[in-house]
Image (cartoon, rainbow, N blue to C red):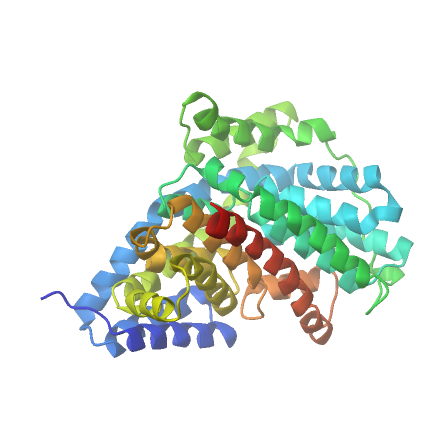
Length: 418
C-alpha cells in the first residue's frame, strides 16, 4: 500500500513554511523545513517524506534550468543599460503630463520582455523619482504605476512564473504568454486609473532623493534587439513549426543583443550578473517543488475539488483560487504558480479544464496578491522609492485591485467563455 500524507499534515507543513518566511527566515530553508514537517505530521515516515520531496523537486529541474538560461537575457538588459534606455525613451516620448502612464508602460514593457518584475521596477524607479520630483507626484502614485505595470507585464512575459507554468502543463511558452495579453492590457489601464487617484496623496520625493541621470546609454533600437530576438526565436514554433526551447532562445537573444549593441566584451560579465539574479529564483523553484511534492502526495486536491463540487462551483475556479491563496501565502508569483500547478494541475485537467485555460487562470491568480509582505517584492519595491512600511501597507489594497483585474480577465475569457 502506497503511503500518503494527510491533508491536515500537508497544510500544517505549508503554514510552518509561511510563518518561517514571515519572520524573515530564508525562504529556501523555510520551504524545506515545512516540507519535512508536513510529511511527518501528515503520517508519512521519514523515508517516504524525503521521497515525496525529491519527486517534487525533480519536477522543477526543467523549469529551473530555463530560469537560469533567462538570467543571461536579464543580465544583458540590465548591465548594458538597455533596460534603462527603453524605460527612459518611453517616459520621454509620452511626456511629463502623462508621466504616470509612461511609468506604467515602462514597467510593463520591461517585465513583458523578460526582465524580472522586481528588477524592472527598481530600474524604472530611478527615472520615476526624478519625474515625481519635477511633476510633484506622490510616491504611492509612482510606485502603484510601476507595480501595476509590472503585474500587467508579468502575466505575458518569459519570466520564471510563466516558464514554470508552461513546463508544468506542457505548453509552448509563447502560447501561454499570448494567452496573458488580454489581462496585461486591462492591467495597464487599471494601474494608470488607480495611480491617477493617488498622485496627490501620501509622501512626496525630496530633492536629495532624486538620482543622477544615467549617461552613455545604448540607442533604443539596439536596446530592444535582445528581447526582440529572443521572443522572435520562441515565436518560430507557432509561426513555422520550428521549436526552439527557451533554454536556447533566451541566451541566444541575449548574445544577439550584445552584438548589436557592440557590448560583446561585456557578455561574460552580463551572464555572470544575470546568473546572480536568477540563481535564488532557480533554487527557490526547486525547494518550492519539495513542499509541492508533499502536498501533491496528500489528499488536499481531492478535498478541495469535493468542496468545490459540493458548493456547486465549476471546477475551473480552483485554478485562480489556488493561485491567489498561494501568492498571498508566499509573496511570490513563481512559488504560487509552482505549487498550484503541481498540486491541482492534474485534477483540473481530469475535471475537463483545458491545460492552457488552467495555466493562464493560475497565472492570473498568482499575480493578484504576490505583493504580500511575506515576500521580498513588497520590501524591495518600498526601498526603491524610499517609502516607509506604514505607507507601503496602505498601498496594498490598490495593488490588489490591479491584481484582481489581471486575475478576472483570464477567468472570464478562459473559464466562462472558452
